[in-house]
Length: 577
Image (tube, rainbow, N blue to C red; front, top):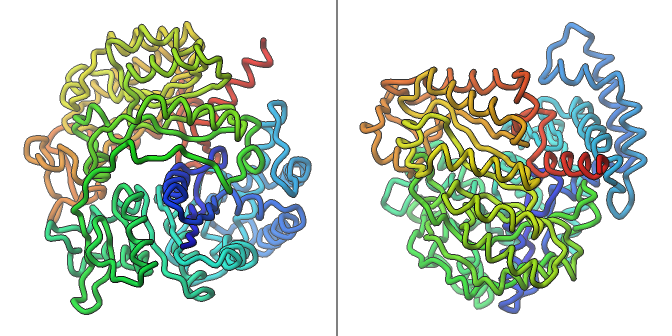
């Protein structure tokens, strides 16, 4: 059995995607032959080929010459800013582009990433209204019908489809982990269908959120639901909900034996006979002992990723050990309890990454790493003399500050922490379970030990007042020198969250008809600042004199991911030293 697993375009260019790494490693462990393709980074390298990029720049210049200054188009102001220096940016891209990847160093990192971002933004003029940059993809459904709106089409047809065909797979899997991958993935699905007669299966965390949105509790989709219609387009003919390793293997075994897979746990498919979308939810959570060491076979680490540091993701656990936050629905979506991986296996995987793949920095993608795990890893890394740097997501816990110094000695350089609010009442209503004193002490310890901090904050939580939101901003201002990155977002109702199950308790009311999770236009709150005001507050922070430049611009055309902020800080510290 031969399987291609790929991640559609739409991801940041600094690290390979964990989803296809985990799935491919598991299938290889079970004896299947797997090709792993990060189509996001491969597309970027294809698009920046100097001759092709020159043609795209000329096409974009032709567009500007034909429409005139009075014409309005998406991101006009931002594109105008970069247009004057586009030749200089093109020259920088030519300097760093290589057949095998990118020649990015600590000295040219900032200039190279800025130049790449600028040329991508400028050449988006050739595919309007689609806008594509390093951490941003604005696209619409029209891209599926209009080739002129699809910047990925040439890559799909000239390189990716032939690459897939040469492997001669029996099954092709697409992993959707972010909404930005949706339309590029649908366009890719259409190209694969027209060129190859191979069944496809899709999955991933964003795909699972789509599944949540259409279910009515009966194991089927909701008839007439627009979201269901969109979900059905992804199924060619299969999908997998939640954790994918065991269901994907079971699907492969069924296809090998030419058996009907309709009854497999976590499987999605469209029952044409009954004209209904089937969603099989029943499934046991996977035992950690069955998980393999993650490998990076087939992924261009150390080559095509746009970084002089070689990044790779890893996990020390599945699920969230706290799992109480009122606003969160991740555990519901994934459908799994917290399961720590065997500690010795994590150490073995760290050594594998370092010794076989030359990984410099491991991003632990846990929902929240337990403080005991952080201490264990730090102790073992120091004992074994492993030269590695790492970062992870953690909760504010009383025992965490005591482990910060040891973790820093072992190579911890980045912690992502869910602060959410500087108001004690709101923190309690969120069921976060920490004190502001613990949060402050943790930040102080991180600053003392050279650990960069990403702080997550939220505005507009039900009943939050303007004064309470200002408490959060005041905390950020007081600690601006101890925070590297701030992820600020307005609160949005998540399907399956504690709040979603207790709407009346939190004062959530329907505006018209019924409350639809993830769609703020369908609901309001009885007390508090509401979504629109919360969004305006977040946007106002971009111009804040102390913290504005630290706000993570997830949707902006000049935005970058957390890894960029870490590298920028790291290289500045190296140069200063």
